[in-house]
Image (tube, rainbow over all chains, first blue to last red; front, side, top):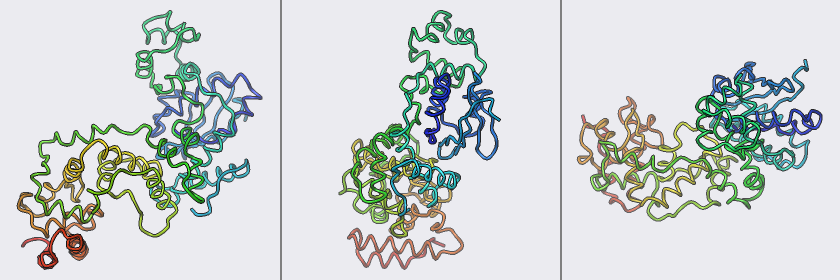
Length: 90
Length: 360
């Protein structure tokens, strides 16, 4: 998948340095994936991913440090990072 | 498309992302999708240059996937069939081998590329765009094509294997070029690619020019990408891939590779056997039987022209539609082209144009 919206990540990593390796890990998985639908996201990311409808996904770090909110265009193979925030953030 | 500008600062980038969100679900093949494609490339280029993020470590990806899927180190040891190796890898004292990556990927559906080392935290294909090609896109969107080779290099990654093209000749109903009547060959050359035997490969500049003209919408008709080699690349290697700038470039690059690998006769032979001619018919032999109820060897010049007119819009120009007008106009246009190109005489074209589309 192609990923855009990465400009949101450095600032978050600076504030939460313990998140960086997991963020790098999940983005490496996404970048290498070829998702055709929600089933594929679940196969790769297990319970960390929750479809929110209209192509939006929430990906929660299993370590509880962050969650990513992304929008996916499966046809274009594109993931747009809309937000990264602390997992406890409501 | 003409108002797309390079992204020079954060404000430009945010504006591009906002527009990407707006166009996010654009249908492939529409001007909106073309605009989306260029905006994505520009945004990714800016991020690659301005967002400082380290490349991902395969163990970061593995660890995240294991936790997300609820896998334990013991599970990992089972996949690797070794507790010590599992421990060493997770503690970065040992690197993953190809066999290990295959085993993990199959067992847990983790993309192998994420475990292969060097997987970038930034996106896969777009990172290459950003590093090598996006600058050219910025330029071609505005003024020129200065980094054409870089863009073409990006599109040349992850392309299908040309062996798939050769495999078609193993089909039982494959017809060698020598058995295809010359007027059938001439009709297709006249209609689809009259310079097929004289033009060479596709230049980087030519690829970008065609893509830029397509995307910027200068003129109503799409340009480029309609040559016989590109059709073979598109139909056999890229079928099902939505139209996009990257597919457009891939078609051109694959066509160039085909021309560098196979002879012109061979490409034409494959094309005439695989081209879609409507009503489920692929290739000239099947189409002759389907539309005219005869073997390919018995095809007339007029019938050849009917078939040669089909690739552009197979279902619109079918001769067996109740309304023959479009099919006849298309056939007659092909016959005129054949005459103009000196492939048949003018009188032969006129005689063929007087024939009925389908025999009673």
